[in-house]
Amino acid sequence: MNPVVSPASRTDIAELRQLYYAVYGPHYPVALGTDPAEMARLIADPHSLWLVGRRPDTGALTSSAAIRSEPGSRIGRLEGIAVHPDHRASGLAGALTGALCAGMLDSGRLDSVYATVRTAGAGPQRLVARHGFRPLGILPNAVDLRDRESLALYARHGAGVLDRRIPVTEVPAPLLPLLRTAGAALGIDYPDLRAGSAPLPAPGARASADRLELIEAPAFVGRRFRERFPGREGWFYPLHTPNVLLTPEDGGFEVYASLNRAGGYCSLLSAHPDPAAAADHLEAVTRALARAGAGYVEALVPLAHHEALSAFLAQGFVAGAVYPAMRADGDGFHDYAVLSRSTERIDFRGVAAPPPLQPYLDCYVSAWASTHLPTPSEVAP
Image 1: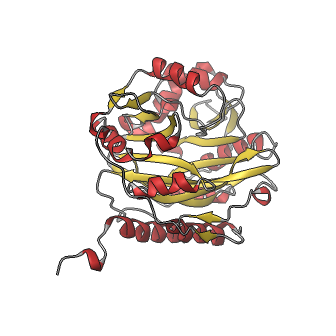
Image 2: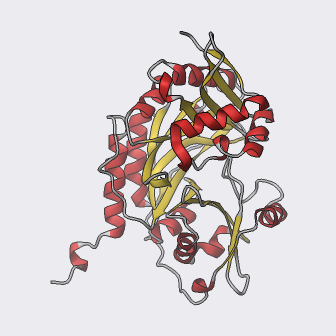
Image 3: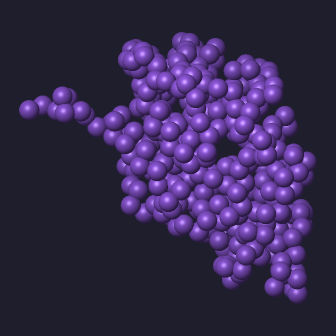
């Protein structure tokens, strides 16, 4: 029985909340299925598209999915895929995903769409793969649902976008295996790419780092962020809005982040006066966010920013994914790396890793071991 697919409306919100509860229970950390005000805003957002599926005979709402974007952005996020337990294995998720991609990506409205996909089973990965999404890496311990779960990063690009990437010729050596893995998986290359000759910087002094203040006042933080960054110069983190601010007692720098307490994760968005000002204090920033409930902290860093990448790597962050052609710049596109740290034990035993994802998982395990395990010369005899 083919579903009736239509845009979500405000009158659907009550049914949608029931659907997401039926699928995810009380632990779904996304406003799309839990917060009526945010749901209404997304439904009315002209830059996004939210579709629902209904039974043609009864009109009952059976499925939901959305692609979210924002003003001035050419990138979207596929999210909120939900099919009622009574209607699984009926092709509903695929029908919605195909319709969303046709409306937002194939139509030329967006350059790429990404999805963070659960790895507790292979089904969600097979779903997005059938619609042209390809794996870009692994996000270990990325979300706390009933337990800590790792997510896989998948993306689909518009026609010709990957051919217009701006070349990068030098990156920190720990990133080379990830880029080779991505190149083989996506059929792209990094010509003339070499490892930087400079060693990773030593972690900075901790004189004031332990006295970071965390200000969790979303409206205030948002206003201050817009004052510090009136344009997009100095920051790029699509579909994330800062809601916390971290600063030392002397106000020497400000770190802006998006903290999701329900999901136990946080994204570092930018720093003022510049990222270098906070680079020596990433350890303290991570600890402060862990105390606030973020067991997973990630950063999105341009591949061309060798110094910023080196700073994160020196502070124990590990690159788990790369997003080629993520940000448009004139006629070209910049590649970005996703680096993360988890303060909780990473356990990949429950991860479903189909063949396309397995090389990224192997790459991450090796990179994590090189970062956090002692070398033989460091082990006392």
